[in-house]
Each structure stands twice: as C-alpha cells, then as structure tokens.
Amino acid sequence: MTTVIYTGQIGKLPNNVRSACIIDSTVKTGCVEVAPTWDIVMGVKEYKACCQRGVPLTPTCVSIDDYKRIYKQMLMDSFVKNEVFFTNLLKEPTVVFTCYCNLKTPGIKFCHRVELAKEIWEYFSPLGYDIVLGGELN
Image (cartoon, rainbow, N blue to C red; front, side, top):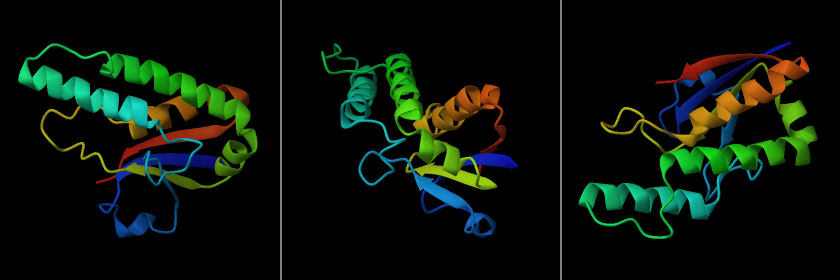
C-alpha cells in the first residue's frame, strides 16, 4: 500500500483532504511523536529576531541549520521509540502533517512540517514502505 504524505497550514487545508489522516505537528497542541520542543521553536524565533534587528545572537538562539539538525535527531529517536505509531501511520493512504507556518509569507523558507515529511520518507522508504511525498497543500 502506498502512503502519500502532504504538508499544510492549519486552517487552510482544502476540503478534499478532510478525510485524510491529519496530524498536528505543532509544539503546543501537536502529536508528541513528531512535534519539536519549545527550546528549538523559541530559539529559532529568537535567532530570526536578532538577525532582523541586527543585534548580537544570544546563547539561546538556534539557527535554522541547528534546528534542522536537532529536529532530525529528535525524529530519528522517535522513529525507534515510537515504531508502532509510525508503522500504523504508514498504513494510511493519505497523511497530512500540519502546523501554523504560512509558507507563502515572504522570507519564510523553512518549516519543520516539510522536514518531517522528508525525514519520514528518507527513514522508512529503505525499510520497504511505499511513500510518496505529495508536497504542500494550498
């Protein structure tokens, strides 16, 4: 069975995916198996704010590259720890990972939900799962 994985913004999903398995990946209300931590979410926001204001970075700043590295390791750990969750998820024909990021906003070039979809594909495809990345839903 093929699983098609999409990403999308909460509240902006088209009606034709309402029957899909929709997973909230936000830190506040999301599925703990895929949600980032408050430390990296707030750290990347602080990093962006410091860069925009042209002020020195603080020790709690997390660059986008660091965010991706930390989040990837979190996911790798979760894939092992929560194997049953992910194998059940990959039995679904359509999965949509959501959060509040608006990828149409100028200057927004990164969102963890896109990284999440990519990491699931990279980890589980070599294990024999038939996964297609369907991209961002508008």
